[in-house]
Image 1 (cartoon, rainbow, N blue to C red):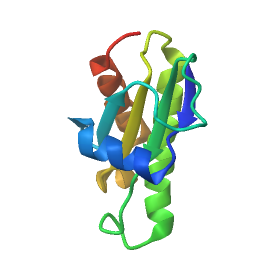
Image 2: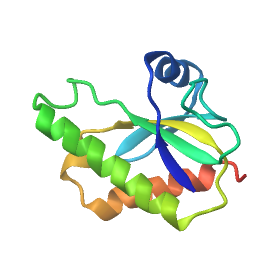
Image 3: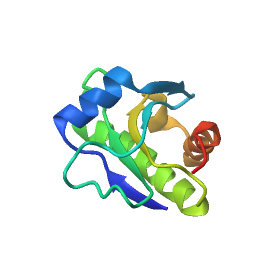
Image 4: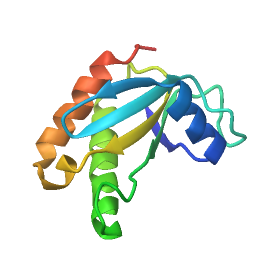
Length: 121
């Protein structure tokens, strides 16, 4: 399964507005089934399009907000590599401040429990 970037203001706003919500200990994930309406998306391929949103309310330091984003994205990347039966979805990952201090296996467990909720393709 391929992991691609979800980019574009309109695409991200659509997922935020109309997407389904999943809440975990270290992050909240908004997801929307199907390919994004973006010229860079190839409709024939199965892929997971992932983006991250971390506002300044999470932490004052941009370095720490970026670390939260990277940890969540890496946990998703490793979990998607293990599974091949996932449908095409668009994800927006909104990390919580607890994702900065917790152990990496906790973030991975959150991602695995989210992927078990997703429809299979």
